[in-house]
Image (cartoon, rainbow, N blue to C red; front, side):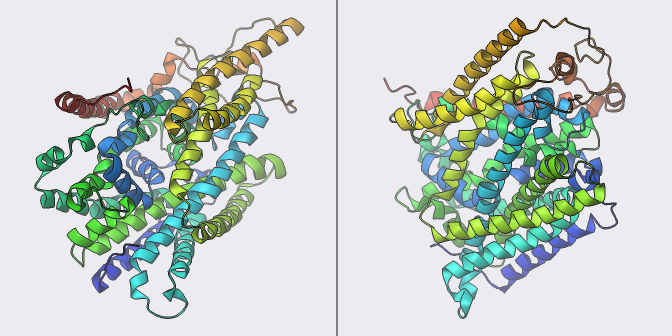
Length: 592
């Protein structure tokens, strides 16, 4: 396994960063009143720039440096489309989902499913998120930390229990779990978000070294492009084994909506915004950051393809080899700090969100409905410790089976569970006819269809982008048919007279905050909220406008539409360049 040679200055930089991260995590939360809103939503006090950096930090981990560089080495710059396509999903989030989330004071995203459908949908989604967070994201991030610890710190240890490479990985898992868990569990979302802000700065300082030094080593951008034009294609054939253009540009319908618009660890940062303007600008700011992150993560792999040659193996080691060859000792500590920053920010984000889910959706809802703020915060901390301990155990299990392609499997899991949930969330906001039976049928049928597609569609087993897209289309059909059948059955049993809705959110409705849906005390497995309450949720053009008071305050240069349009324009210019490049270097797009 590739290691990076470090000196004492590198270790000093790394240790200083550790103290800085933990110190900031405690500092920003000292003296804060321990209310439910303060602990789980940061007291709704986060400014847009902290939301932007925290959203990005929630999306990256230390393995991005290694795995994404390996993908860039193997397939080229096409891997960057995952970041650049954020303009699509972020626009959907800003215009469709965000206004309702912010104006109705949600704590957890599964609460939306209870308001729109019923508690059963809420518990299914919340449980699936918790299982995914603990079994995949947190444990996978800790395992990545253990690997990084072994690769960088291991060479300094020559005796004792830690002299064994596996023991070094286990020590790294425990080290990052204790360090990150300490300030995250103590301070809640505010600690996690503000340390994310600092960690993104560290990530940028360290991450920029390799691509800049690499470009210098290969003779500049032009020399790199002309060395292997195929590595600068983003529109690849439909039968490409990993990134077919038909899957790359439909992924936002599945994982994009599920991960960005409905996953607790991403949306929770937006829920903690000072106001709706800061929430929207935070998402836009995260979009700008996504434009440049491929330069840190994917681009080094393309550089390695030229410097190391196409026969270099394994591809995942390319980033570490570049660090060893290009970055002088004394500066490698910045790389180590950047990788640690990515890992700790991702870990703190998901850990805090898992703690929120287990407290609000299960403890407060099912165990102690009348729990005080103090009791909820205390349970949130206890739950955080339990979640972290379970994740450490799973990460330790991963370390026992190093041959398993863990991170590919984790990504595959995302594309497995995303389609049905993205459909029921979109239908819940955009279609008045969606109901609980349709939602439950979509979840069950979506999982079964994904399994069948993987088993019986030969030649497509590894192309999970295609599987996710076809599953999404199938789920849309199931949602429509099942909801219609349920509505027809109910209409034949009971005739309900239509009534005007006082709190309608139609295009001509006044600018007032959305009201939470009033749910009946007892609700059956297939029951729906009253139609008058559903009408309050359905999307209208009013979603696109800020509340009147904020529109008057954030004018001119602060108009969020201006910054959103500039963000979209930059991404479209990037794709215009690659369309031009493809015309200069044609690629066969279809298999016939």
